[in-house]
Amino acid sequence: MRAPGVGFETASLILLFLYGNLFCYVASYPILVFHATRVIDFSNDRWRHQPLDGYIATFFLGIAALIAAHCFPQHRRCLAFGFTLLFAILQILRVWWVLADKNRRVISGSDGIRGESGGEVTLLYSYARSLATRRGQREKIVQTEKPLGDNKRSRTSQRVITKRGEALWHKEYIETYRHLREHGNSAFIFVLELVLATLIYCITIPSESGAKQLSAIGLLFAIWAFPALSAHLIGQFLERRFSHYERRLIE
Image 1: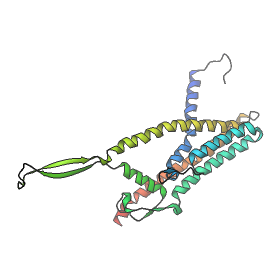
Image 2 (image 1 turned 90 degrees about the vertical axis):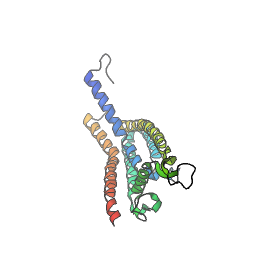
Image 3 (image 1 turned 30 degrees about the horizontal axis):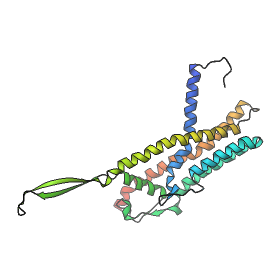
Image 4 (image 1 turned 120 degrees about the vertical axis):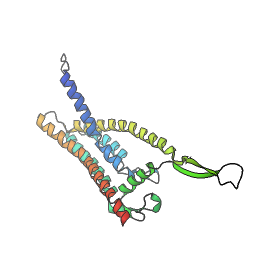
């Protein structure tokens, strides 16, 4: 808060804007992990609402942070760090789950990619490949020959090009769920900002020096952001798996 009668300078406003954007960006890190591992959130087109679910975990983290801040003021720092650590471990478990060998699935010939039928792949690669294959479908062009005139014996014909519209709805469907997800991200980020702000409040002790408070905030941010590093690992894995595609075709 600013003192009465003291105005904001341009430099201060710019710094506040940058800090706000940085805080928003850091708060959204868990969404990156939840998005990359979303294959485990549904089973047979049904939401599994399991303990590893990102929505459930975020809800309970927010409630726990509020309880720690208001009901246990003397132990709120330890509780805040503990809750944040559990939240980070949950995200890491999600990444492990989609990459674990025990959760591999067998690719059938109907999955859409030639040369890999019958092979076992991770849940992560199976979902990413199926999604890419589904999105890559285009309308089919079929060429047929149609005889000219009423004379059935006539050999003169014209080539007719028709398009099958069985995949024309894909674009509209993709735009629909992307639109919902993009707007939902803003709400999700806002909730995570509130949760992270509550956790910061829990770990800051007014009686301590500014250096100690800054160190505590830095440690909290490090724990909060650590699972998002796995997104880089996931990207590396998908790239490596894709690089083996041509080799598997040759084999």
